[in-house]
Image (tube, rainbow, N blue to C red):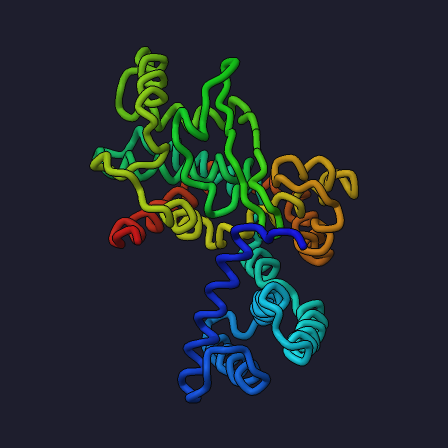
Length: 340
């Protein structure tokens, strides 16, 4: 039997702790039992239904998967394994019939990769007109988050890039090189992605700050040598791990997890089925089946196809100006909150 990936073990531990808490409420032992499993899953379902996005069967299935993994490794009685397997099959069927929330979120905002890049351009263009250094820094951060991750849709855990550790200056361009731990993988996988100069200039803007452009090379070398985080707060302190996804959501209206959906939807709309293969390297996917199962929704692709056909005519200067005002308002709102 193979050793499970660390992420699977952590999830298993989390679910076992939840199970023990639920069993304790019913004055049951922490050991897996049929009644304990039924009670725990009922508790979980009740809690999930109170969330804004409601009950997600994918969460229920992942929970049962974690308990099932433990039961197999711990030598639990066959009746426990069969009971969990039955739940797993039921939840898998229900999950298939329930559209992933990320597709709904993306369709609701109508965002595409191009639109996110337009937001980034609008923010960066507005920096020169901003009088306050703190706000200029926030605008550069926001613009860079939108531009970089629209091109390289990293997972939340990998988004806090660090000069000289996961972000490098090689062959006159910025290069992301980091390890990504996928849920069912035993070992982290290396993700290496060069950023086009049009995207790299956003990072350069962060590197420079308010300094003269002639200082760019010197400042690049210094930040790489110091191993500084790419995103820091206006006072120079490191941003929290949640900073990137929270700023992205504040500016775009979408969660960070929709980035890969956006990437595939745009690629399919512009290049047809071949777009899947073109987008896979940026999303760090090897299997086309995984992409089809989790990231492609025909209705979303259709929405984006219609929007992409019309996007050129909509890029007027007054729309960008209006968009910049909205982005500034989002930054103002986010700036009032402390990073968690």
